[in-house]
Image (cartoon, rainbow, N blue to C red):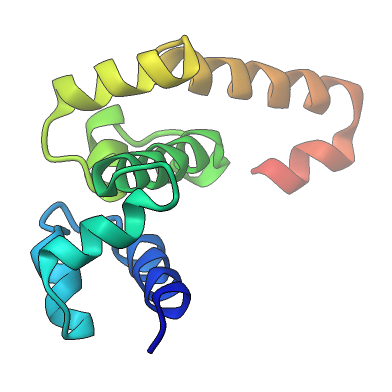
Length: 129
């Protein structure tokens, strides 16, 4: 398997398993039959470290859940855990650093926007319920 193919496999594993708080270079390496150092080396070529790739994927997943009306009544901590974060304080700091707002502010803004659409159109209300 060439470097490009291995790197693509690593990125697919990050995509599919980012919700696992135990995801690590060692875990990825074991799945692919390579060394953890080689995982890091291949990802360095993307310009991002493994931890950066994982963090971005987890933050993206958390944002998707915060914007999903089906998760509206879930606690922020539940969303953080579902996205793969094991430390709520770290999640909040990383989220704010990445998006410039708190997770609850993003969710509140999405809820307000959905409510405004509902006020404008009955059809939109039934879609987001």
